[in-house]
Length: 171
Image 1: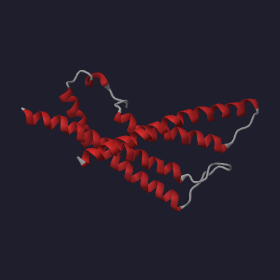
Image 2 (image 1 turned 90 degrees about the vertical axis):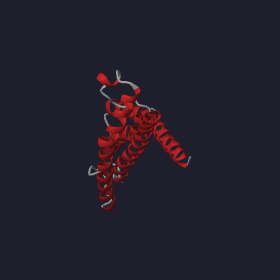
Image 3 (image 1 turned 120 degrees about the horizontal axis):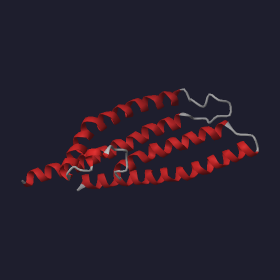
Image 4 (image 1 turned 120 degrees about the vertical axis):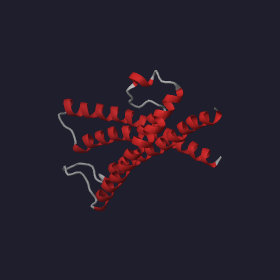
């Protein structure tokens, strides 16, 4: 029962992150709109505004990745997958998660944390005059985004494993 509660909490965290990511879409549209008005009507723009645009864009994908995976809205080549039975889909999801998704996310968690840690230790900021300070914050967001995806991958493997092995034990 405790494991199911933990899985439920993890899923809720990804839902919250996905909702936050959706609000970054709104913020990005407003920011780009204001930037366009300033750039073309007033003939001016700021480096920090352009950097904030790519930070928002990054956060949309980083915070929304685990949520998209949870809702099965991620990119997938469905040429064959749609025609498979539920058991075949569970097998693909289970083994694909173990062989590809988990190792990939573990590698990215390790490298992105090191990347962000170095950035924090040197107090990295934008190299451009007038750019955003604390660039390490967006680099830690890379780590956090892949952590959300990693957790969702574990949940998917667990749920697909239950589907696979539950049916095998019933035979």
